[in-house]
Image (cartoon, one colour):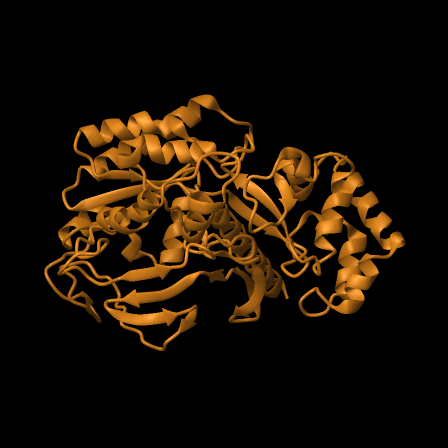
Length: 436
């Protein structure tokens, strides 16, 4: 892949790696030897990629992960084009009635009441009233606590008891809540969670509980600030998963959080200088991606500009919308404080309202000249297929790889199991029919 991007004229390759997760779930227990081997292999691959001319390599990681900095600096010192792109706030998992993704789902009573009264989006008035009844509340809480005591407790009960000190009522303003404000901060954690989720009319949290899954193990975001200030050359705020978890997260507003929280609202530590933050999101990101025609306000450069009102820049509470084909849902989150957005010199948004102008174009590899029926038209040859072209489909090829190795994807394991189950059922039906 890296050589292909380079032959095409250069570009950027983003890598998501955990450095020690040698399989999605270490069922047999965490193996330090395998984890170390996985980490060494990850770094070997990233270093080799970063040495390919015209290729910029980035990798996402938690903001508290200082362990990788020395390795990163060593690669940069050797001439590697490698950048760390941590998320500059917590990784947020959102729980609410509307999304249906929350720990109370372990309760059979809750699921029955939701199924009968919840309505299409789990937010009917009758359902909300039912949740305020003591009989239902007590039944739900009893079942949730009992579920945690079973030999094979569910994922949700593990979330509550292992990470309850990082589950809070949602707030768009306070990104460094104290441990005592969490559901584990005194009293019954299940009742506290129930009271948050069952009250969507609350003016602040809107019935949303948030679990901080990354960067908040010690209830402070200070390591993130230190990371940016002390290791400026190697760090560009980023982190993305292509919207892979739309029913659980909404991280697209991280950039706005950098301006509102880090440059204005933070109370429990120093702020980040505005000029450094803007440079990181403009010039440094453009440079990292090889886009030398933008990122600064200068004559001859592309006029991509945001005009921001720093007195009111911020994010609003997230909402759950069912606007994906098939009626599926996703979290969305609006922002305020952008007076004007200019793309290629043309105003595309004014006071948060789209103007209808669409001057943006897909950023293409410099040597790409278009797609034709038989492949890429131009001088860039495709890379080796390693047998994929001999399979009926890429899905079949992926399943073949999965069967022959320790699989890195839980999703692929599920698909493989489903395929094998269907094949076995079909074979059984054929045998029965032949007997008849």
